Image 1 (cartoon, rainbow, N blue to C red):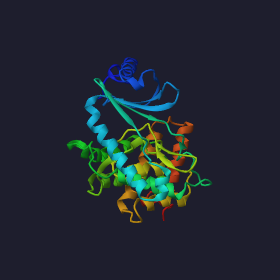
Image 2 (image 1 turned 120 degrees about the horizontal axis):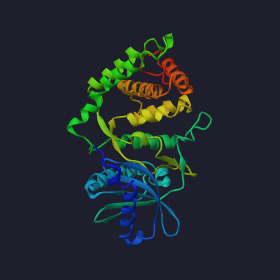
Image 3 (image 1 turned 135 degrees about the horizontal axis):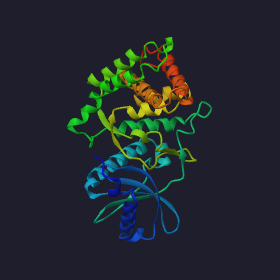
Image 4 (image 1 turned 90 degrees about the vertical axis):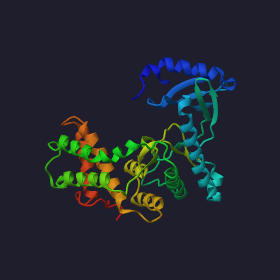
Amino acid sequence: MAESSEQTLCSTDGLTRLRERLGKIGKLRGWHIGDCHARQLERDCVIYDAFDREGRAHWLLAGPWREWPRVSGLWGHLCWASEIIASSSHIFRFMDHMVPEIVWEGVEEGYIGYSEKRKASSFFQAISGAKPPRFENLVQLTGFLRLLQTGENCFKRKESRLMMAEMEPSAVELVEALAGRIPKKSVFRHWKSFYLQNARSISRSASYRLTLSLGSYATTCFNCTDYGALLIDLPFFLSENIADMDLCQILLDLPDASVQDRQYLVDLYFNMDIPSHFFTLLTHHAMTSILHDFRWSPAGSTGESHNLDRFASLSRQHDLFRTPVPSWYL
């Protein structure tokens, strides 16, 4: 269960406690704490803007000591992945490490980490059909995502498998909630059976596993510098999710990318050996995202119409919801 807001470092009292914590670390005294950009309430871990005495902008990470073994292990894993990428090519070595350098400090109440912000802009927001990403950046991106999923999953618990086991009943509930709202048109004729079939396949198949994931941060924590270096920027937290789900999220959030760029992403990520079950996961994720958005858009609203158009477009990409492989990859 998540801790109450009064107990967390994101609350007013928590911010006061965080300022007091900074005051106990000599080199951080006099720093100004800005906005909170990311938080994990259940772990009381936060990431803030912070400004040193000269006004330079930093990311500030903080949490309790009980989380330190997990945080230090995860950060070590990220640094390892960054080092592998950098050492794989002299081009990537020139671009510097994808993961920023963080200085870690500690006081009685918990740990503090700080990292000076690097000058860069959003990698994914700049991508379009007219402005494709650099090929070497796609190699960095896909390599990092694959390396992230290697090694020990420190979030793994006995009940983790429930994440996939619950996928089928969740799909059934969503279908029942929306059955009367999806128009009876040929483009939507097979959506229910197709959606439930994919959910059943994922929840019952041994082809899927749970790994470390960037989750909702998958398309927000990648930045690019003026000289073309791809960086993993803060704020973000790692979590547990189905393997390859980060790639699914990225593909979903790149509607303006060219067909060729989306193909490159998939081919590079899987080294031209794409498992068939990936497309089932990709399609189910895309359908779930649109259906959730549609569910919460008021009947007759512009949002509802927009989401129906998205759903119809997705249907046409999948042969009217009869194949999990999208037409843009064929």
